[in-house]
Length: 165
Image 1: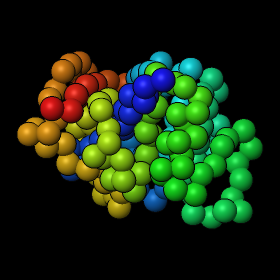
Image 2: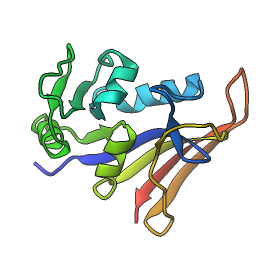
Image 3: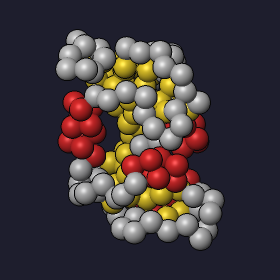
């Protein structure tokens, strides 16, 4: 069995912010629908703070939470004390794709291992303490882009796919 494809998925503001005070600083229902469509039936790896911000396992997905707190448990999720152990646990399920779903520390730790990115670029510059790594065009090639105008209270955004060069 070959190693699964490792894909980062995130909604990212123009200034790189992905989170503020344990939440996402915008609401884009179409982004949530895309996240669900892409990740359902697959394995998700995320940090504990990201999991806590969601508050529950996402249906139709195997969720692996990376946490240094060996006593932490979440009903319906698997836990791993390190990213390497989380990825090994994911690989045991023999998935074709493992989705890395945040937060900032987990993205940074997997950055050099990711094969692809699925990013929602959000046309905002909010305050926030959690950031996504810079997408360097020397290392990442844009493979698809779908632009969306501001509508229904959502800011303008684009669904963008990247492949590692």
